[in-house]
Image (cartoon, rainbow, N blue to C red; front, side, top):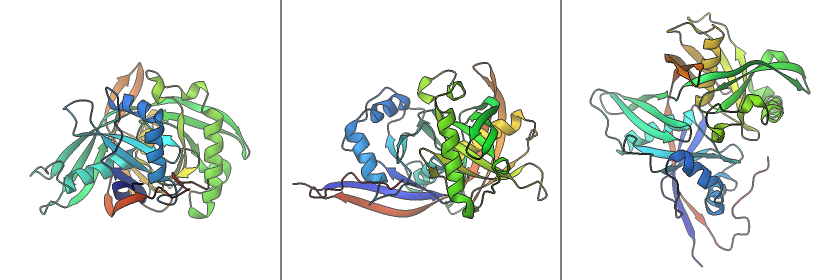
Length: 340
């Protein structure tokens, strides 16, 4: 009986984990990364590996990671299949920021002498860029995540919840997010309200996931409410532009420790549509643990007849571990378990 081995490198972006896996013993088929994601979803072998690396005892219910795969073409440096405890997601901003830092720090992409290096990544929702900033010693100081265009799907969607009737905005930022003002359900985005935020986030996602508001206009593979962003407005007394704190609940009850990269893109689209983010303004976006991203709109474009924005989110990512995970063939808890 042979022992399985899986190598991985862990980063965190604003407190949210990202486990990078570059080698799989199973071929991931598909003409592009979006097709590879669908193949992975239908592959028992790949799903098993995801569970091994994400679930306990090697991971946990809030673990996140990605399988590095071939890009769509030579225009990108790499492709990635993002995963969480319940499956494979369409987008991940915090993961893209981590991948940018990792690509430069490992030499996969040589740093530009200018101090700004573009790492181009194909993800299921399209082609994105991690713009990696380095100092004179080549140390990564920040990463800009330039995403696919984001746009509002529907504003002011009524939802009946256990905490009363509320309205939410639904926007696309690489994935589709419902967005709820924490004040509408008597909450603040603070650690003592974690359980209540998770509960209302799951409730809103389940209410809208199969609705017309969750339909992507051009690619059915991107449909579905990926998460609920519960946000709190902190005012703008420390500078121009909105200052908000959020907790993004995605998959089935995972709470993003970072301000959520693709979620920040969705918020940029919503705030722009509502006139709350003037041209050139910066969104200061905090997480429930106090980490911060900044977000800005680089351009306004049209997507399938919808007004859209090209969003940029800036954060930092740090390496936390290198692993060689092993799977003993005698272990009857393989591929693992989660308690939520």
